[in-house]
Length: 511
Image (cartoon, rainbow, N blue to C red; front, side, top):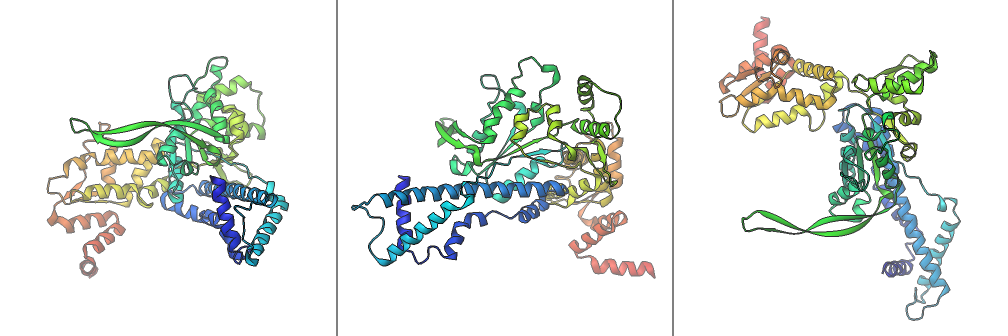
């Protein structure tokens, strides 16, 4: 059936020979490639949602662009090869019942042009050149933005994405999830369209938890090295039969509960065009890298392999990321100096590392990064809380000093961007409890409020008190905000149309 459609397309193409072999026709061949967002476009989109991580965003933007360039190039060459085979078949066989072209001069010229193009393409040196698959390994501390980067890229590319936690995976035949569960989830997210799923992204999170510890040598490791071995063919790319339960009909039972009838279906998914992004915190790897580099620079007493492994196990519980001082005096995270041998020492098998040629490390978030995450990117944490309070008609304002203090707390806890939300939840718990239905119209969170967060005896900080204002206390609310944050005061002035009044008050004070 497919060959019939291709033959029909070639027949239409031949009869329209005037446009074939023209620059416009050549551009049509590259139309799919041109639809791929450029690396600069991808990075600019990431900049709107992810704070910092400049190197990581560039690496991922280039890797994603090249991956889809490879996928479309592979598809284009397959189509051209099929068309060429059909054309050669027609040249060898004179099909009188269904001729490929009519006897008109235009049709003959079109066939000649088509033959010439296929002849040229067959002699090109790059015809047998096949781009290798480049999967990505992202290393970074918890809360540095690994998963957010992948999800944001999937959004801009408009492709399905499936995020799977590797800690739930086991070898086939054991209790747990088989490795192919990630492909099943991708297929579901692609609405069971195989072609769409084959252009998607699979994120294997917590891959470092599959590292085989030295203590388990000689024992059955059903959730470690065995899973790594099972992932090899999946990541490299091969056709996989996936059995899923597909919803076919929705209805209601006798109690009016919604029910969905499902049918077992089998799909064949080719994983060769799926981009695999492998991620993990690799806690303690930075200590190993730092120790290796320092040993090379200034050799100390010889340490056995077993003692080095013990050191790694001992240091894995420290959240602080080691830094390396380069020869030019610049300090960088030790994770940026990771080599494949370091990953093997950590517990990943060499075969898996070889299938993930692109390795990038995300920098630990600093105080200024955490501060920016609170208020600058799209879908910022502070904007989310402001929107929540708007739902019960309360204006929430947080001063810059208060946000800086929150960022400082998160940095101290070492939990990255995820820690920011936890601190904000504790900070606003009592406020969120008091405001709905209370007649409070304005809430101000200043540095004093955040400082009281440390002084509470309760983990949820239920006794933290903010500054509350009724509707008639709007001016007092703005004045209090201005005392600690003049920029915030000006923003509130503009929002409530108070700018002329404030200028008059300032003039009176100066007088």
